[in-house]
Length: 353
Image 1 (spheres, helix red, strand yellow):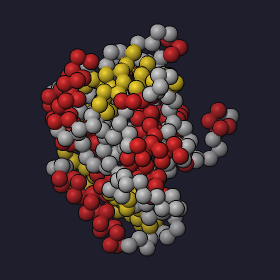
Image 2 (tube, one colour; image 1 turned 90 degrees about the horizontal axis):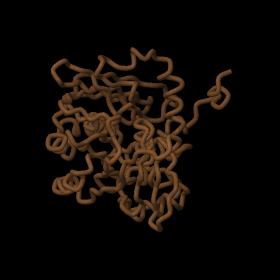
Image 3 (cartoon, one colour; image 1 turned 135 degrees about the vertical axis):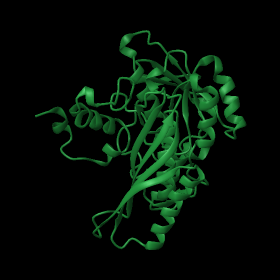
Image 4 (cartoon, helix red, strand yellow; image 1 turned 180 degrees about the horizontal axis):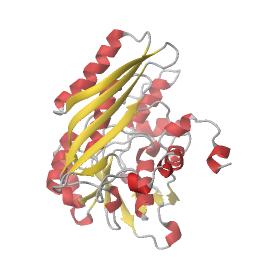
C-alpha cells in the first residue's frame, strides 16, 4: 500500500486549501502519473514541469500562448468587496498576467444547484462579464449545468484564460540576489471571507481586495519585463505558500522581513486571534515579484506611481550556505529573531476562492 493511501484514506478540506496537502496531492496523485514528455508543449514550453500560474506554449516567433484554468468556489458567494463572478474573472486574468501574458480571451463552465435564485445568478454573470469587458478580454465559449438540490452548495465557476506573452515570466528563473516585492496589503481577501464565514458577525472594516491587476502588471511587463524573474498572486496559502514554492523550485533560501510586509493591523490581530498566520491568508488583488536587485527600488517607485502606494521590498533571495537548507523560507521578526516560515498546512480558510 502506497504512503499516500495510508495517510489519506479520504479527501479532506485541507487538500483544497492550497497548502502542503494540496501540493502533495497534486504532485503524487496527478503529476507523477503524467510522463515527463507530456508535461509541457515544446522544448521551451512550461506546464506540469514547473506548475506556474499558467502554462506557456511556444508559438514559434518568440511569443508564447499562455493558458490557465481554475475552479472557483467561495462561501459566501457574495462577500464584502465582491462576489463569485468578480473573483473568477479577476483570478483568471491575474494568473495570465503572472506569467507575463496579456489576457485576450476566456471560457467559463458554470455549475449551479437546483433552486439557486435566478436574480443571484444574473448578478454573478454580470460581475464576471463586467470584469472581462473592462479588461478587454473576450468570452469565446463556455458551458452550463445544473445539479440536483443538495448535491452542490450554490454555484461553482470554472474559468479558463488565454493570453499572449512576449516577455514570459517563469518562476524557475528566480536567482540569488533577487529582491522580493509585494504590491500592497496582504491577506485582505482571506480575512474578509473568514469574518463572513463566522457564525457571530465580525466587522473588520476590511473588504476583499479582489480585482484584476492589469493596470499594474502590463505597464511593469512593458517597462521592466527583463528585470522581473518571478511573479505570483498570493491566493490560497498566501505569501507563505507562494515564496515556499519559489524557494523549493529554485533551490534557494528566501528571507522575508516581517516589519516590511504590509498587513493591516486589524487583519493581523483577527488572524492571530483565530490561530491563523496572517501570511497564509489569501489575497486576490496583490502581486508578489522577484526582481533584479539593482532595479528593485526603481520598480517599487514605479508601482507606487501606478497607484499601488503600499508597494514594498519585503525580502531577498540567497544561495544556501548548506545544501540541506535549499528550499527554505526564513522570516526575520520585528524583534530580530529568525524562524522558518513553513508552507501552510491544514484547512486554513475553506471555500475561499
